[in-house]
Length: 412
Image 1 (tube, rainbow, N blue to C red):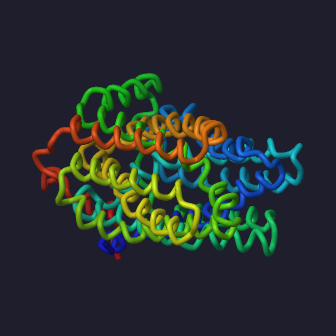
Image 2 (tube, rainbow, N blue to C red):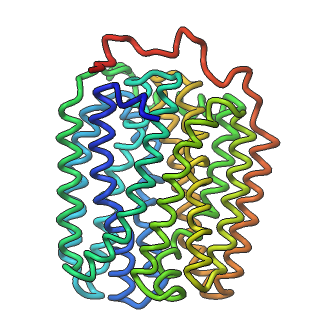
Image 3 (cartoon, rainbow, N blue to C red):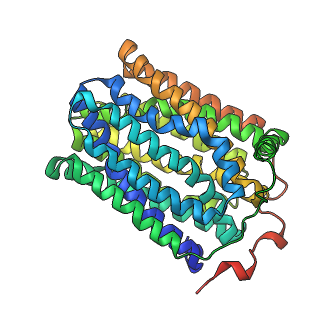
C-alpha cells in the first residue's frame, strides 16, 4: 500500500489532500446539524447535500475540459484558495433567515471542487504511472478517507458542541490553505492540451470517449444508478443519527464507523483491484453495499447500526476504487480530466436527485420504505455491472506504459 509514497509529488499531494479532507469532514455533522437546529426541517437539511452537488452537475464537463487545457497544478492550487474563502461565508449564518448562506457557501465550495477533482484524478497517474503504483495510490487515498471519516465526524461533533459552529469553519478554511501550500511545493508539469483548440471540441471529445467504448459507457450507467441510491440515503444519514439513534454524537459515531470500513477496505483495494475483473469486483461490492444500506437504515440502536455502517464503508471503498482505477489505466491521460468530469457530473445528477427524493420519500412513507427502494436500485446497479461491463483481456495496461517518465516522478 505504501509504494506510491516513494514518489515525492504524490506524497505532497496526498498530505495536502488529507489535511483538507479532514477539515471538510469536521463539517459533515456540523453543517446539517446546524441547519437542522436552526430550521427543524428535514428538507432544509437534505438541501445542504443538494447544494454541494448542483455545481458539479452544471459545471462538470466544462471543468473537466478546462483541467485538460490548463496547468493542473495551478488549477488545484487556485481552487484550494477559492474554497477556503467560500467556506468562510458560513460564518455569517446564525438564524433561519440566513440559512440560505449555507447553501450559497456550499455551492461555491463545490464549484471549486468541480475543478479540483478531475484535475487531481488526472494528475495522479501522471505522477505515479498506471501500473501497480497507481493501485497503491488509490488504496492510500481510500485508507486516508477511512481515517478521516473515522475521526473527522465525531471530532467535528465534539468541537461543535464545545466551541461552536464558527470554530469549525475557521479550521476548514485553514486546511484548504495548507493543501494549497503542499500543491505549490510539487513540481511544475507542462499543459497537455493546446489552449488554442476550441473548448467546444474538447468537450465533445470527452463525451465521445465516454460514449464510444462499452467499458466507459456502462461504467457511467452503473455508477450513476448506484449514486441515485447512495444520494437518497446520504441525505438522511445525519438526521438518522440525530432523530433515531440519540443525537449528534451518535450520528458522528455512525459516520466514524463508515470511516473505519473505508480504512479496512483500503488493503482490499490493493489486493483485489489488480487481480479480479472489474465487472465481477464492482458487482460484488455493490451487492454487499446494498445489504449494508438495508440494515443501517432499518436499525434503531447503535449495536446494529455501527457494524452495518462499517460494512458499507468496506465495500463502498471498492465501489469507488474499481471504476476510478479502471478509467485511469485504460484511457489516455490527456483526456482523463474530461472523462472524470463526465462521471462526476453523472454522479452529481443522480446524487442530487436522490438528495431531493430521499427526504420526501422518508417523510411520506418512512425510512424503511426508503431503505427498501434504495437497496433495490443498488442491486439493479450490481446486475448491470455484471451483465454489461466487458471482460478485460488484461487488468494492467501494456508493460511499456506502466511507469511514467523518470524525469517527472521526482522520487526521493
